[in-house]
Image 1: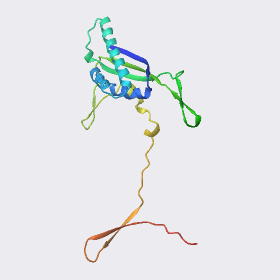
Image 2: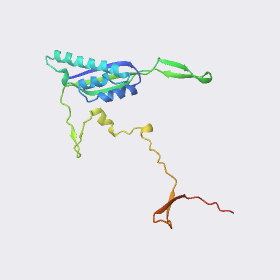
Image 3: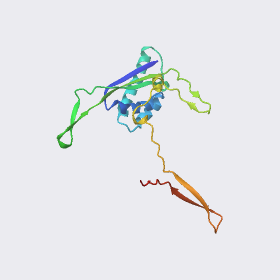
Image 4: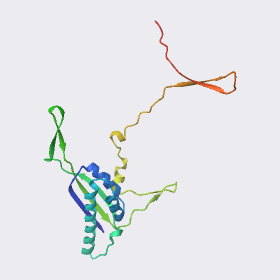
Length: 189
């Protein structure tokens, strides 16, 4: 039995709502509700409402089909966030030197799908660790590369080259180390 619920025109940007939705994808319903309840993100409250609506839809569909269903057996099969409109919701924020910056109020649409089918089996790797199988939506995006700062290679910092010279002191047998840096000598013309 599968049930879907969607919440449309939720306040907040879809990028911020995706951070919350990514935490609950593939989890049991009780575990997902606990995560949503104690997450300190603004989008968590509206996503929790959508989740409870999906649970109620599953119960209703089961009653109509004359099938008994246990809400504890449900798990989040798919959950995704789409971008909503920003048109006609533009604001202007005062800026320095008489300018004005445009500020857009973002909206998003959240869709959650629950099912009580068997979960995909967990794969075991050679090291003995179990890895969870990700839902189809994440598996498709695995081949894509991330852009921005996450994909940019970091520059390696190199220290100036130093030479270590060892000299034996006349009084003791311990080697004395001295650090010297290479200096370029300008040739006089």
